[in-house]
Amino acid sequence: MNRLRYYILVTISMLFASDLLQAQEDGQAARRSPEVSRGSRMEEKRSGLPDLTVRAQDMNERMTQEIGNAPWMRIIYREVDLSKEQNAPLYYPVRPMNGNMNLFTLVFLLISEGKISAYEYLDGYEEFTESRVVNFKDVLDRAYIMYDEVPERPGGPVTFIINESDVPSEDVRSYYVKEAWYFDQNNSVFDVKTLAICPILYVNSDFGEQRMPMFWLPYENIRPYIANSYIMTSNFNNAKTFTIDDYFRRRMFEGDIVKTENLMNLTLMDYCPTPDSLANERENIENQLASFEKSLWMQPDTTQVIASTGKATKEKTTSSRATSTKEKAVKTSTPKAQKSAPVRSVRRR
Image 1 (cartoon, rainbow, N blue to C red):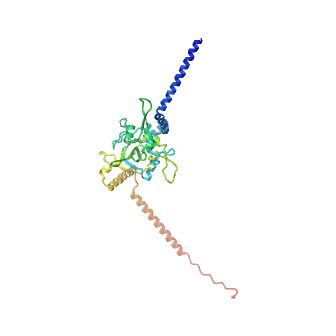
Image 2 (cartoon, rainbow, N blue to C red):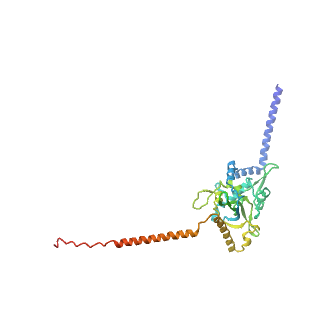
Image 3 (cartoon, rainbow, N blue to C red):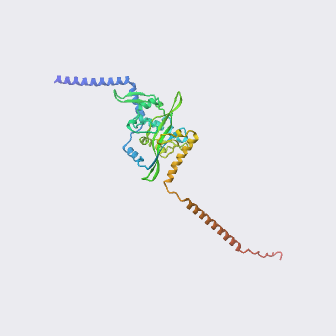
């Protein structure tokens, strides 16, 4: 019996010693690899964006505009210059401040955390399929963004650790916005839908400053996140009453047309060599969209409107003349007041 107790105590002591030794080894490994602990801390600090709930996904599907059966549609490409005051809400703050961040910082965090996918930039031949998804590491290398690769476990996936100051949100100074103007025959409305956006990075090289379109982002993929990102849209009113989604849906931005979808995939610059011809072509496209919308609805007959307006004016003039003649006749028929006889003074009498 004593020998059995002895064996039990020895077994428990060995198990306790092995656990203690394993804990010491884990602590020494953690001290030998400070990058892992630093990476996890930065990852926790960086992950402030919530995952989509089922309700948010359902709401996003309900807000999606179906344009597949539209009998008329025109694809327009615009360039939104963030240096203009009207587009400044998409650019400021350049660095995250008090929980606020600009559009590029938001989408950059979403891509780095794997919440959304970015697609290869193709000029006029955008294809949002699995084969066109860009690798995040390739994006970092093309944009010359500094990063550290930290494996989550030996042989496992790699986590990219990026310093907040290395995110080039200050150098993204414009966006391409792809939109579809279409006629919805089911609801009898002429509407516009934002299809995708593309951030444009300005980089300095030996040949001067160059523009580099980075990637395409389908608008429906980023809408659930930007619908909760409030921005200040006025210098007079500092209350953040609009979201980035409201900013796009209400078309509060100012963008110049750079291209329309065509068979030869030509931009406006390809057939408008001068600034005047480019401005005239942009104005013509805007007028074409407005004219098409106007032609959808029955306009009042202008001849009847002019005739009815002239008749009403003539009746008003005739009535005014009759009233004036009547007043003149009444004034003429009124007898003049006779002068009263002078009153004699008692004192004089």
